[in-house]
Image (cartoon, rainbow, N blue to C red; front, side):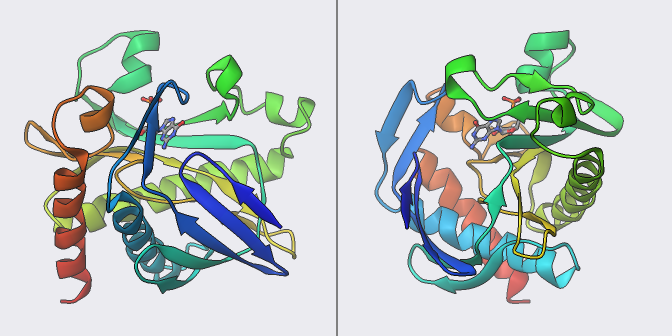
Length: 230
Ligand code: 5GP
């Protein structure tokens, strides 16, 4: 079974799946779209590095193996149609919704759930509504929230060692064959906000036409490679 999304192609092989990262980059619910040579391999390797790190810290992710340049072997998951965002500072849609000062820290991480639905612009959803909508049980929602916070805190430390501040991050979750709630999809500069002082190293570079995203993404990859090889 083959599924093609905006940035990846997934082939299910029984309990496992093969994920091939494409060179496509999109923003604004798919309204903005470009192709950058090398982007798929950078995001695949960064997903392998970050998810490998989470696996070693006992946070379950779907990552099993990396086949360079741009392919991962993963656990096949039944995905929840959700984006789970953890925020350490005010930015992006948080400021658009509630106002506030760009980059101002929260005293503790904030978790938000969004339904993946481009046509409705990924509406934010209250955790209590997930059961009513038939998307996830209360227990599953609680587990996603707790795991997302723990994973985000671990990755914040990881990226700090690589020289970047993690401002926020988006996770996607699924169920494995035994009903365990596991982190799926990808973790890369496409799915989080990474800053070094005023400089932007994530998809905002592309969203706001600031610089060549590949140059910035490469810098993140090289810094992360160097801390895992230490
Ligand atoms: P915001 O809600 O502020 O737009 O995004 C919060 C975080 O989640 C950012 O790191 C952003 O990159 C990520 N994020 C939110 N929606 C999406 C999405 O549809 N696709 C991707 N790749 N990341 C998203």
